Image (cartoon, rainbow, N blue to C red; front, side, top):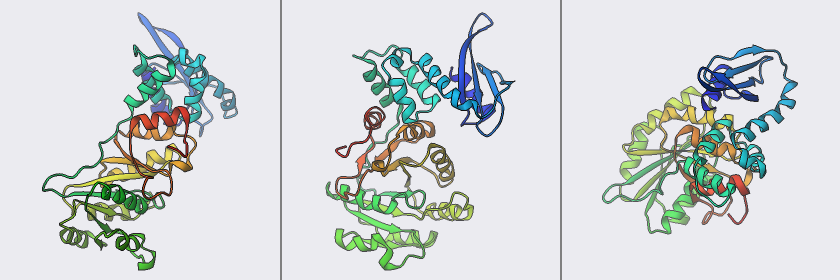
Length: 336
């Protein structure tokens, strides 16, 4: 099934609609034939295992009828789960067919009390997560928060600083944002309140100098500007500036309510500056958490933190696979 889905995506693109599937004879064994359609085209194709699709008639109006076939496909992959309505839950949350296929594979032979528990355990195993950042003896930890405009990089730096301060960690800030007025710089406003040393930088040289000046803190957190994904010059300038700092970890922040396709695009755009982990922000603004799991699993980047509110003290949490798995099955709660 995984090979068939890969063939469909290769031929029709990552957003192809899976309309139906069936087992077919293949040599001495059994293969899988998948009928799929690209929403931007007016053609339907079928893929048998990893064979190139063959053409068949169809139109975009068939998509509505095809939704039921998508559910039938998932019922075929997870028959026991489907009987309890959990397949509908996975689809409604937006899990991709590839992730659901991997989920089904991870559930094979798993011992658990019920299917919900098996799904929870399998999801938790699929989602890569990073350990919480820790100080290293005699070595400063440096982290740059990168991501689109408005994703919450600056407020996340403040939240992370509060969390580290609770553990008696010393933190310094550097802002790479250019063109800000002092009154509009949130870090400049909070550095006095939190007693955090703060420096501003605008290029490679000034960033390197700022790091030299902030030699005593255990952690240095670097705020960066957001870019339009088509702004190649801005991304190249950011990559060049960050390259001036040795041992700099880069965390990509993505808003939880961003659609899955844009998330995948942002990951690829920011790979140009180098990425070490993910942070999902604004979970309280999101209702469907499948794209988060799709992004974490598909990118291969471990999840460092999540945020979901305006509380500067308690809002930021360490990214845990069981937490994302619970979001898929139960949704967001203000008590989370």
